[in-house]
Image (cartoon, rainbow, N blue to C red):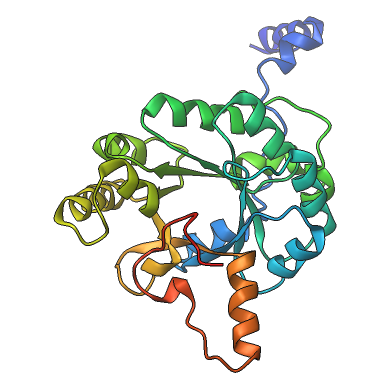
Length: 290
């Protein structure tokens, strides 16, 4: 037995290094969670994010330090570039609000750029098939869990030199259901491993269905999503206007900079304004009064 053990030891030493390391896993996960949104949701606490449309670092920092849990950086419906957003996030390193980016689409280029510049969450618009969200999850994760490649990003500067080892445990995926087609497969979307949050897009759900909030047909679509998310044990999301009027929601999209500036100015002028997000019915995007 001793002879066999010695021979086996010699055999191991004689193997090429590549054959040994191939059986080893990458550097072990440290378990460090920098994404405070993930921490809060895991602890049962709701989170609210302000919506960013203006490519201005000063405005971004004002929002990031105003008390929001995260910032919903809107790249689907704004002309902001990834360079704009990278500059904004970098200018406010260490701010309490986590940067979440709604990408224009779930393409490899969009998701790679968003994660490279430091997004702690990727918001996937218009999910109407499971493959779309599965691809997004795969692209947002490093091997061996996914196919995210390494690049010249600023993620290490923002989140630490161990980012490569902890990114998969921190970057969150938010899947948006914006149409009846998405609602019809809500159970498949919510049960997909890697989906953290499912968002009921109030405006587009009405636009695509032809029904208004409160209509029985509209509410039936919303209930379908709510039940699917509850069954899958994932977090349910919606507009901030629904925070006080609907149960079970934990992740909320709040007002834009323009809306907050308007409300703040009216308050300072003594006009006792009421925020649009406090009305219980989500406003229609793009229809804000000047």
